Image (cartoon, rainbow, N blue to C red; front, side, top):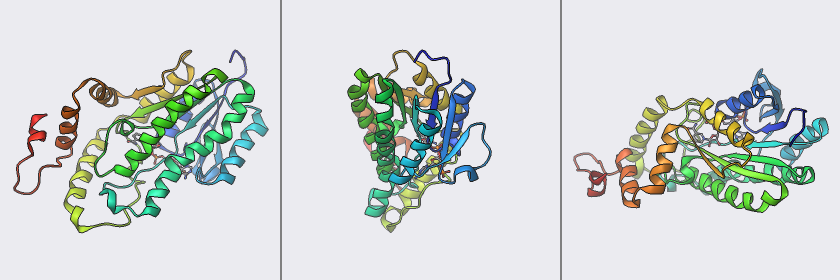
Length: 285
Ligand SMILES: NC(=O)c1ccc[n+]([C@@H]2O[C@H](COP(=O)([O-])OP(=O)(O)OC[C@H]3O[C@@H](n4cnc5c(N)ncnc54)[C@H](OP(=O)(O)O)[C@@H]3O)[C@@H](O)[C@H]2O)c1
């Protein structure tokens, strides 16, 4: 990668939030950036080129990647960012169709992009793939089980792929932010199989998520982590992005599992029901 020409970056889901901040940061750092949105250029004016892309469609992925190759002849950096969440709900409150839908974007979308871009990077003998995971790739999220499952899948895929591609000049990293202030929660899908059983728990976790989202870190923090991973001579496989994410990463690695388990239950008030006391695990944290 000792070329004078700007490096070519492709950032999925660059119409808002983390993807937009990342595309802007990379453009400022000198990359020639192609962002994407399902609405294409209708997604508004941005200081980078916007392509139309739906990561759930093989044809759309093929078309977007071909367009970058046609125009630039190479892709140096792929940032797989496109993704969404389901509003807090019990795991059984999403139908199988909804479970498939979230995996189709958050996980299979990332695989579609990777499978389409990697042959070009192999031909070049170089490239970086940066996947936007989450702290929910190494922590559980009660009432966010499907989303956490997609991010655990992203982490496992990224770490494995990095081992496969390293000797071919390609490195893969996963960036793991905690709560980040973006339209992410405004774009939540509503659970499509609600049960009265979970009404109280749903309301409690939603309240807690709203509280933390209000004081969450700016997406520029995640964009900075992407740039760091993209430009490191020897990139790490995983980067925690932001102070809360770093704290959680530290706890997961060094704190006893029981303490982390109790901390999650306490933070989300899972053992506090009308008139009842917190369970012993929660008080132990
Ligand atoms: N915000 C957080 O607290 C947080 C924390 C950790 C990780 N993350 C992760 O960060 C990533 C970005 O989320 P965000 O917070 O920036 O939310 P956001 O503002 O809602 O951005 C989501 C982006 O994904 C795109 N997108 C959604 N479905 C798509 C599809 N099928 N094909 C192509 N693009 C699609 C959207 O573009 P269009 O609608 O214009 O197509 C949008 O640009 C996600 O992977 C999310 O899981 C977020």
